[in-house]
Amino acid sequence: AQKVTQAQTEISVVEKEDVTLDCVYETRDTTYYLFWYKQPPSGELVFLIRRNSFDEQNEISGRYSWNFQKSTSSFNFTITASQVVDSAVYFCALSEPYNNNDMRFGAGTRLTVKP
Amino acid sequence: SQTIHQWPATLVQPVGSPLSLECTVEGTSNPNLYWYRQAAGRGLQLLFYSVGIGQISSEVPQNLSASRPQDRQFILSSKKLLLSDSGFYLCAWSPETFNSEKLFFGSGTQLSVL
Image (cartoon, rainbow over all chains, first blue to last red; front, side, top):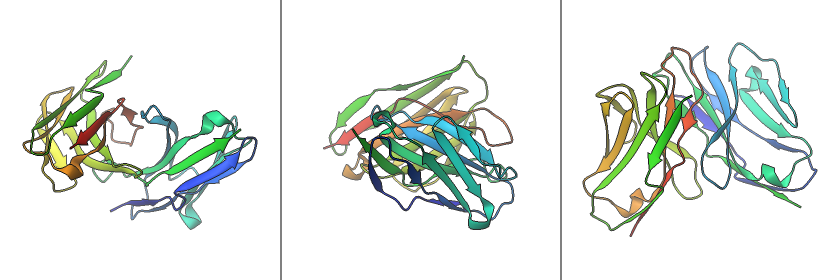
């Protein structure tokens, strides 16, 4: 079964600092999808990005960037110039379309950005 | 556009009482439906998922059950709640596609079992 590990339980940074959230995954499938979700204090999870296993090109969206490396089974998320509004719990997730299509989440990383 | 409704937002129940959480999706057909639980300070645990009416897959043996009586309705139930059932329950849906799509989450139900 697939597995997602987010080793960082909590991270605290000061505003404007860059921060990287780590995600390591395990899967036996060659086709899979990786995701990042943000859970603000309101509780509802918000989708950030989806990446398929055949696309290792890194992606940048504003202050957010993602580094996908199949060689190390990692899909790390970096926030540049962090802001207080970035404070949330961030989840990495893995889905295998040939394995019931259910999504497995990591334990999450709580990011606190202090002013 | 598609929307997902989940209720109630908060619930306080005594140990041994029954539970019924409801989730409905609008604006789509044949969605995949999911129930997740998030224990305090912990990650998301997949409880049930459904790919169609009456089709329920259980991930964790427990005293919870799920049902899908209609295409866009997903219900989480228990006959007798345990203290360990406390947590934040999230319903989610994804399009019925072969390739993994992102999940759309409801606003969650905070369940406290006392």
